[in-house]
Amino acid sequence: MSPRPSLPWFRVGQGWEEGASGPCTQASPADMTTQPDADSLLVDRIRRGETQAWDDLISRYEGRLLAFVESRLGRRGPSEDIVQESFLGFLNSLPNYDGRRPLESYLFSICAYKLTDHLRREGRRPAVPLSSASDTSGDWQVSDSARQASSIARSGERKELEVKAIAEALSEQIERWREKAEWTKLMCAELLFVRGWANKDVAEHLDITEQQVANYKFDFIARLRTLVKRQGLDEEVFPELYEDEA
Amino acid sequence: MPRITQSDLQAYLDEALPPDEMAAVEAELRSRPDLLRQLALINGRRDAGVHSVGEIWRRLRLSCPPRQQLGSHLLGALDEGQAAYIDFHVRVIGCRYCQANLEDLRRQQEETAETVKTRRTKYFQSTAGHLRKKS
Image 1 (tube, rainbow over the protein chains, first blue to last red):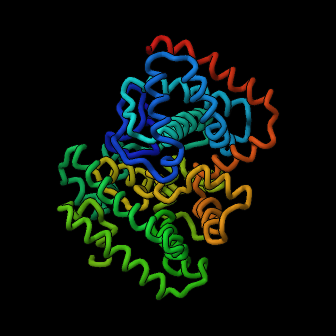
Image 2 (image 1 turned 180 degrees about the vertical axis):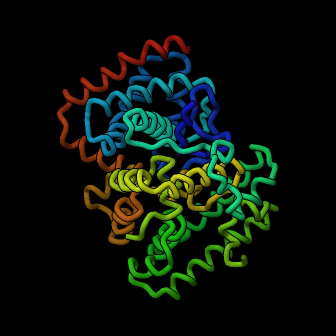
Image 3 (image 1 turned 30 degrees about the horizontal axis):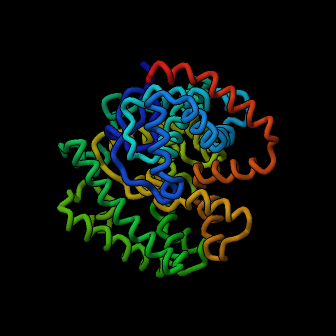
């Protein structure tokens, strides 16, 4: 059996699958101003079978989904087919779609899933073992964090709480940087954590000193660690926040 | 730009890297079984419930500018700091979702109404039957 593609949303019980329910998550800043209430109403109307609402949703989102797919495939015809499949996938998953989940992100996640599947069928994207169970390399015990985490038994609800807590802390910090126009700090944290760049590369790119990068990183991690502790969250599930202690 | 990072591999699994970087990772994967093992390890960590701050940030799109702001950016209506950040987010971070939104907004100014209508009609006609079945 070929492995299923990974999903661009929470992996644990939170990915998009036809027939699966989406997670309850807060709206991202990018979605907040795409009128989540309007989206929610639109979805309600679609659930009632209103064709005009479905037409409206297609009009609102097809352009960005097509741009997303076409940027990767480079061919209009197959890209339109994938967008079409994504809309079908959305309808098929609609009974279980959690309306509190940002619609745009949900549609992008379906689209990415369909795109990944297409690329795999074309042979462009190598199959990746889904988990330790499907790996035969014998290298599974090399990671301390993975070994620690494998012993952590937590409910899906607990995992969502962990994500929600960190997401709220991150959102608060990002908003604070934005309000104060501290763009360099925001860029620094984004390069370090989202792109995983080393301090040296970040310093060079942003034209600041490595010491400044280290200071920003220290402050940022300290804030997140405080929150993890305050929320009573398990430190083992956020290993990167404690790497310096190892 | 640095070589492929762990965060890049996480984003690769989610189809979230910019297209040229996705292709670069795929090319590397063909000759480097160690990278494939790293990807499997990431999947294993996810299954085990280990969180990455960067993954949460990226997946929840916590720093993505609103679409309206992207539109204002195209019109050159943002202040220097905001504009520089959006350029950074789109080009350096390589946010695929914001890239797609920007491209869509650009195309809206270029495509003919007829082209767009034809495409949307095709989507609607090929899916609306499912809507009725589900209702």
